[in-house]
Every structure is written in C-alpha cells, then in structure tokens.
Length: 153
Image 1 (cartoon, one colour):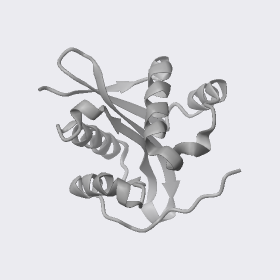
Image 2: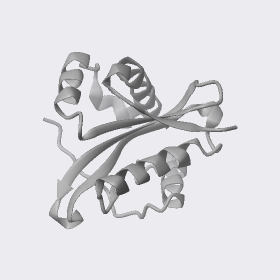
Image 3: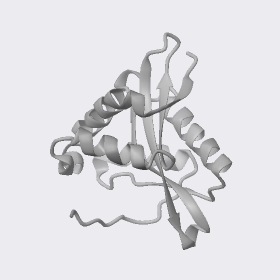
C-alpha cells in the first residue's frame, strides 16, 4: 500500500475536528478535559496562529484519510528558539502497524527541518495501556524525558 502525506489547511477543519475528537474518545480519561469542542473559538485561534499550527493527513491509494498528525510551533531558549510539538496523532485502527504513523512523523520531521527547528517534542501517556504508543515514538527516534505537568485554566 502506498501512503501519501498531505498538509491540510483550515478549510479541512471539520475533518480535522472529527479525527481529533475520535482520538480523545480513544484516549478515554486522558482526553476528557476537552468537554465539548468549541469550534468557533478553535477556528478563530487557528486563523490567528495559522503559521504556527500545521496538520498532516495520511491517505491511502484511494485518497481516503487513514491518519492525522497536528504539529504546533513553540519557542524556548533551551531549544535554541523555535521547535515543534506533536499534539495529536491518530492512525485508523485498520492501518496500525502499517507504517502510517511513521510516515506522519517523518513528514513532521522534514517540515521541522525546513523551519530550522532543532527538535520536536511529543507527550505519550504514561500508563501501561499506552506502552505501545511510547514504544512507537521511541522507534521513531524520540527519547523519554519525563512526565509533563499541566494546569487547566
């Protein structure tokens, strides 16, 4: 199977939202903080940050979407400036272990290199349930650096 990666834009927002909500459902309690998606606010913020928020879709031979990855640009001195963060990634269950996720991550890496980033970060849930996800990212070259903390506002 040939996997094609396509960069999506805000005009694809309904499809992107559908995939991210599916990801949050799959995450279960780790994804519960969203509540209901505030589409108007998210669209407004996406427009305001269009140069710092990027979406990549994996498509199969027939052009059907089989995976998604969202990538945000951030800034920190410890990273020598701008860097990327993979915030959401989901592969259709029928295509897991078929190279879809690896192709999405590779697209993110190439995009980051073109932007001059020195790194891309990702958070993989800690629980045993998500051990496979963490192993996937490690296989793509990511190294575990510890848990991320947050506060909801």
